[in-house]
Image 1 (tube, helix red, strand yellow):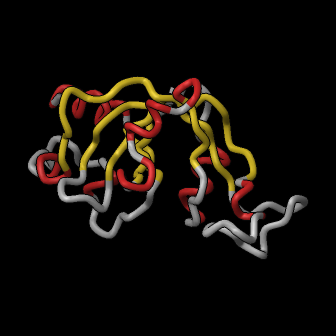
Image 2: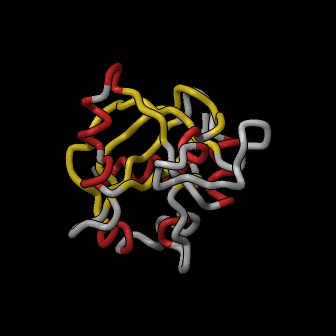
Length: 153
């Protein structure tokens, strides 16, 4: 099992949205960064655990846990000219963008804010979210960082 952090804006698609989806499951579309795409396409697997992170909000932070339930497959929004994620260079025969499906597991007891996480930078030396310049919406999390962050809950 691997561990991940996936960012989403709570007013666009937050942990509450995921919890209310049929079967509490939804595809994670619209990722338009090659490194994040590669993580989803090549490395994320069924059963992997995901920190659900609310970004671009008054108090960004980790708010819940999801589980990978479908491995990487072509992102259909890239093929839809009406979608804000449309990419005319992506085709059915040569998809450029990929997505995964995730399922709601639970909300954390509280938001573990980015501010609080930064207070633990010495205990989380390999946590990509705290590394300067890392703005990826999908990033790997070590087992040690995962366990440590859950202890903060």
